Amino acid sequence: MAELAPAPVGRAPSPFGAVVKAFVPAPVRRMKGRFDVNGRVLGRLGPLEVRLARSRDEVKAAQQLRYRVFYEEMSAQPSRLQKLTRRDKDGFDRYCDHLLVIDGARGGSLANQIVGTYRLMRQEGAEMAGSFYTAQEFEIGPLLARHPGKRFLELGRSCVLKEYRGKRSVELLWQGIWAYVQQHRIDVLFGCASLAGTDLKALELPLAFLKTHAAAPAEWQVRAQPRKGVLRGEDVDGEADPRRALAALPPLLKGYLRIGGYIGADAVVDYQFGTTDVLVVVPVSNIHPRYVEYYGADSRFVA
Image (spheres, helix red, strand yellow):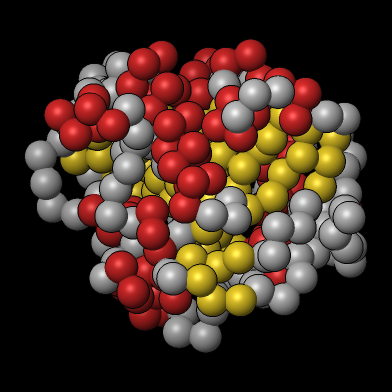
């Protein structure tokens, strides 16, 4: 599944193009496998606000949005149950926090007002779930074992409604993520980033560029799980034309590289979603101070 940068968000402008403030969440309380911030707003831009889902109904609304984007707009193939419920739901959802961008000006039900979402899973949630979602494609265990004292956060299932894929919505998602990182003292962000298409031959250019310019050092390296549809890093040859390669990368993935992200060695084809995924790892210590200033290292909630 397309994680860090699925096509719907990837086509939006980079979230780092404007200065916005982040807001540090209030103390959290445990809530049936998820974590709640008592309904407080993490940030606002005009009529849009960002916060965590407060209830099962709000998580359900986020799943409905994901279905609209992944299965109705894009080429993902739903299961029978997903077709019946019209929700992109899996067993990991209950162990995650769900970040929401809400446009109150749309009126109607809350489900109609939710225009963007991102799924956040901390290690506590992964332990309850049995694994991180990303472990279905990549060998996450060795990475965690090499950094036993660090707190990891998996980012995934990101999507924004087509008419909201401008910088404001994406900025708000990142504002919320940064607030969450600060609240939970996260050390490392990671997840799958997607390139459109499943033809590995056609993706040689961007994959060669990532290998040459963004390869993870040994301490942050992650390999793919053994499975069909894996392109091993050692099989990616050639020097990529940087200009052409960058043009082929989703903007959100380029944003991750810009703030100091690394790319794992291998690429994995996700046939259900029609994408080819790479593993992105972003140590928070790598993030350039100017990006931290955009979101505010010391900040507060919007009331």
